[in-house]
Amino acid sequence: MSRGPMASRPHAPVSLALLATTFTVGRHAVKVSRSALGRWTATVDDGAPTSTFDTQVDAWEAGVREADRLDRAGR
Image (cartoon, rainbow, N blue to C red; front, top):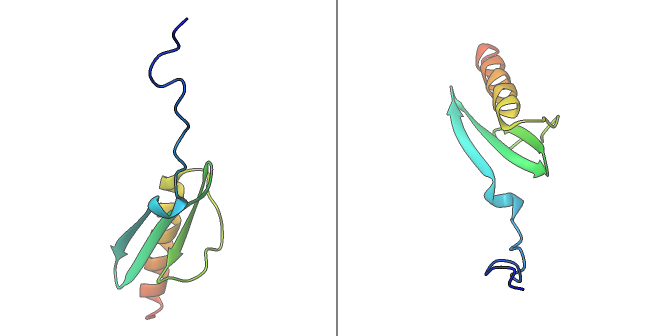
């Protein structure tokens, strides 16, 4: 019985570092990264992430809100 060409191939590991995107928001750099399976973080200007999120969109929105807050505060 044949299981097909993909059946015996091991899965290639996915580096979490490859799952990061940086956006310019105002005067800041917002980086959205996958931190674990199904979890995302956002950092502003290479700072430490403060929360994790269920979706990439939620992390991006939090990063944009923080960048906007920093712009309004003159930072």
